[in-house]
Image (cartoon, rainbow, N blue to C red; front, side):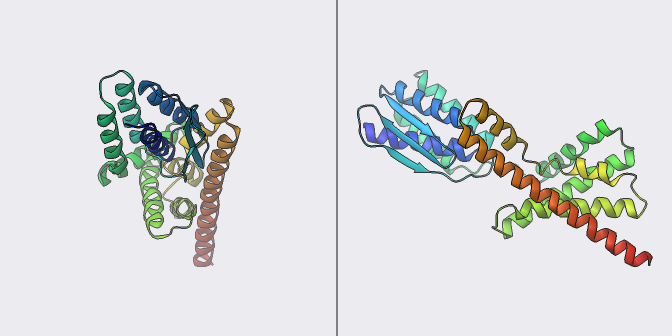
Length: 254
């Protein structure tokens, strides 16, 4: 493999890692470890929107433009695994390239029953902190599922960023407020806080703090702003949903 081919491969590795949710320090270290294992002095600089890969012996730099993608930590894990195998000498450059191509094309996802159950159980966990009633805990399970499904299906049909998170929050707020106003649930607030857990950008918030601590300030701030906008969209959806159901119940009661 030539130096240019290796730089191109390293650029693809960095892009997969970054779009799958890896922090920039992991992207840079993984790319540079691969370069050293291939006996090239690879240098990598990653930001949240671009990856620059080159060598100390070249004046040219390979630029890869990156857009924030969906979180897929399984791809990050698989890239880490094959890169460690290459650094340890367990696989060749050709095998590394084939593995990277396979991971890049691979659509890693879970089946729908597992995702639905996962959303429900994630929605239940915070209710244990609130010492909520068993009835509210059960409602949080199903409200969280409906909010998650609303966000997923709206995201598949509406490409505008942050709308899906807002619609998920809208459904959660609507259902939780309706359950309380109808007398079926005790606390709409507890149900809302719990049922929003599948929508909260927890990984993005965690990574943003890690980026800032590692002094990758630009990437950390961009991730943090993105997470704040998502959280704001969710909150706005909840407010609209609860307000709408309160207006409807007041009209019916009047």
